[in-house]
Image (tube, rainbow, N blue to C red; front, side):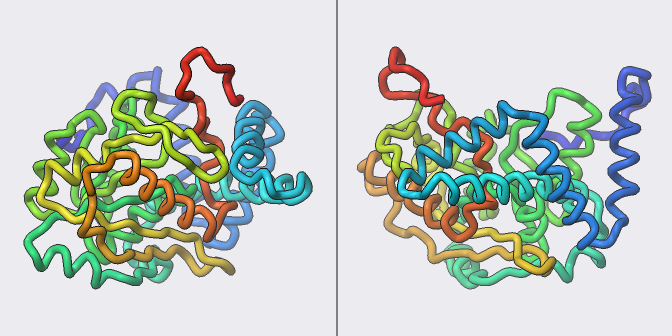
Length: 307
């Protein structure tokens, strides 16, 4: 567990003034009505894709690789919907970090909590599988209203941003564990905690298997899920998270626990993880983080990049 950062006088050094200005503007914006914030986010997202062409190119290539059966027109429409959702994600960070409980609570929906209760009734921790949906910050806040949990994250290099990120992500939840603190996460699970874990990005070829993900037959997929499930007294429970239409807020859906997981067959087990991610993505493909270079690691290191 990372010790919760405290405010330090060095944060007021002139090198951080521009950051403080940006944070101040973001805080003032957070008080706009929710529909206005989402409209602002959609506009910001479209502008970002027009200016940051390299990010747009990655998202477009991912859609081509994953959905070759789609027409070019369909993929282009999905790409620009994803652009809008990406902008909303930036706005949702300030919502998740700064909105008071009384304001956020009406937007938080949760179904399937009985599956988490069942695991904890057996004295087990819960390794909660979440996917990189763009509304991830609000998903964590939404989950915390039903059951305060533990986050697994990469600490920020900027101490001011780390201060705000740690406390923002801990809001409505318990504490955060750095992504390199494997023992810390295992300990939390053994203590019966519910811990977020996201296995759906390319973390390189170390501790990975190459298995299908959508139409890409050999996708580097971490075996970290298996490591934690084997080492800790826990149940793996996947979730779906969604941004609801018509500005209704956010929904978490917990699925039945995987009590027969892992099986000892690493390829079969991480394939099951990827299949769950596919199901989560297909519910709202425009809400997934297509900006990540998911297929950068190839089985053959000498093979040309898919990007």
